[in-house]
Length: 423
Ligand code: IMP
Image: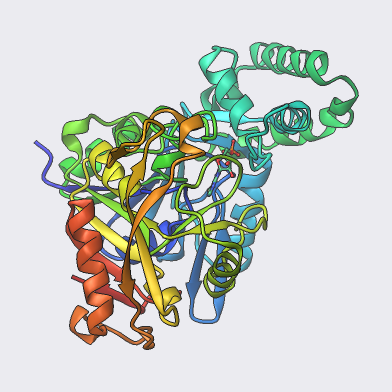
């Protein structure tokens, strides 16, 4: 019997919901934090006082002294990038000794995966708009049973054979684009020993922790609409970002999970290609982007902005089995006069639906049905409780809760750790 508590934090839109901030706040109350999928495509920005930390692979919980941080088997690990981040944290005085564990079953993302990602994107007639971090090709190799895992780093000759095979395949596919790969590849493999020293069985470690009464946070990257199965395929990432991916991605069973917190931004954004049904007209799009600093943490790309999409949020609540929602960036809407929420979509046949369609092509052309809410035009950044919020902001949150069907448990009103309302 496990007496500990296991919570999953999952994005409910197209990523960039502010999960880093929510994980950072929740990390205070837990003993272990584990990432369960994705790789260096993610970018979590965490503000602590004057300091800004942008983390791509290491869980943002690392900023909290003493917490153990794990990268699960569901992650694809970019070795060079991982140690760059690791060393940068150490340089800034974060004590990392014994605090980071990497699943021995996690797949390695090697330089040729990145070269392939770039080549696929450059050559594709219909581009996904990936982060070009090699994510698709690394998961392809995993599913194709050609991948290399952390445990394989001890494999001597067999390791060498597999690496050469991977390199050859990449060369066949991209020819000249593979020049210079060998050097980076050697660099990655030279870090193998260092990586092996961090290797662990995350499933075993987490199960033991939960049995010992510890509290665990499983941290997802990207968001529900980018899930390989449940998102706007093919404009998705190559892993299961949703809550069910958490157990698989760290090696524990679903019965070990107690709660699932879904993170939604008070509006919607999307970076990369693919439909965004509640997208804003150019003037408001630019205004929200500037107010919210909506530029990719990984690629710097401007994010497209949209009104809160309750069709997607309700779908996310169902797919993830949410037990609570955290609404982020409410303060970004502080100066907006009138705020809309998409509550349904028109369909091709002239009807309407409140269910998120599987047909991504038709999603390109749906017309959202909006309801409009008066803005609050008051600074919310110092609110500590729901009662501190203006009436219209509370009404807006109540409506989000009603439409999504899950209770709001947190509201974020600024980038600082302290700018959070716990409900
Ligand atoms: P990939 O994960 O790099 O293959 O990119 C696939 C899609 O997911 C693209 O639309 C990316 O922009 C998007 N994406 C990947 N990671 C993130 C993220 O952390 N935030 C937002 N979008 C992401």
